Image (cartoon, rainbow, N blue to C red; front, side):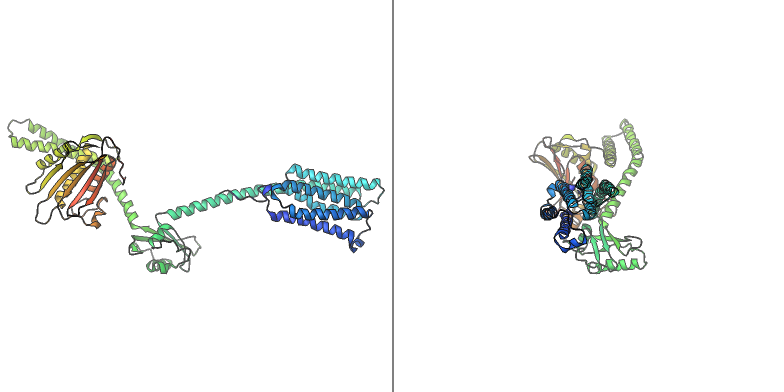
Length: 540
């Protein structure tokens, strides 16, 4: 924010008030001079030696002074007005000094203020020029009186003092004005910086996810940011403007603040400020060490839990990396033993089929480990052009062979002979495995087998895979939490299956959503990009 112009910052933008007082002083001096000439005040000094000159100059000077009082406040021509008005003062003072020799000292003394104003308001060359012209005029008036044999109204030493005073005063006043200008400019810059910092701090506090309240000693709310007003149910943001008391906004929060001020420790139990709002954990702190103002921080427990989940996932990623070798070593041993058994000639076809299944599952488990590690390392996926129809058919056949489906059923519903899509095949296999596993486990009615169907459809720009079951469905309260990490309704579950599945989809620019089925059951929809389009997940 740029500083506003001022008298010291720029001469052209001097306030009207200063110009008015400068012109008013000139009118006052001109009025006093007229009083000396036309009133009985003349008795205070000697009679004018040149009455006509004194009357003409004093009246003319008063008229010009009044004109400058009204016209001289034009800020556009400030420097010119100040300089030429000082020239008028010098000419009038010189002529009146010649017409009123006895009042010469006073007239020259009054000119000191005009020279000082010129030094303050004008650049140095013009200020010194005005002082030099005033000195020359004083010397000229002294010589003029001497040539006409007029009685000396001042000594040569007094004249030298006035000349020196004019020059010195103009220079000193310019230095004072220059230093004041620099100080004012520095103050303007500092003021602008402080104003900017204040706005930045206010914006940061206003946009903080943590609710912030400032409460005075009487319990009135003097400041509340957006998060705090939302948590307190004040959508219009009138808490701080109307000085609402904390007790009326939240009696329980006011009670905790009062207990904290009384020396009690902060309570760790979260509280719900409004019925439809999330729980918050309040924290209190004094604004200053000796201040009665109190800062109240309202931490949203959902945000805190998300941070804890993020830390847990980060720890899980590091932990999974340390376990990678421990998992790979037994898998490699099992795979190697399987290959050795396959070379035996004493095995029948059924045993060889079992060894083949073991070998396939070792490869599948190793792929899952690689995918989890890639997710922990945030490695990029390697999407490939896939035929979803063929991929899903192979997937269904493999699960029928490896899983015990004596009563449950897993079917593929594919109308098109070929459905192209872009995705990493390892990630797609892991996502479908997680979805089918959940469908077979939870998608069944009591005492009835599970019926799971994988439907593949082809759109104009996208390919869709639906994993559907005919179970009891998922309640809305649980559906909103399905893809949260570590959220599970099973005692033996980890709550990572659907979370990892969605993260793998996001890594492949695909989208995984839960779709409610009005007729009953559950449906998880996997939307993939086709080779001709680029799909960006809306939730990414």
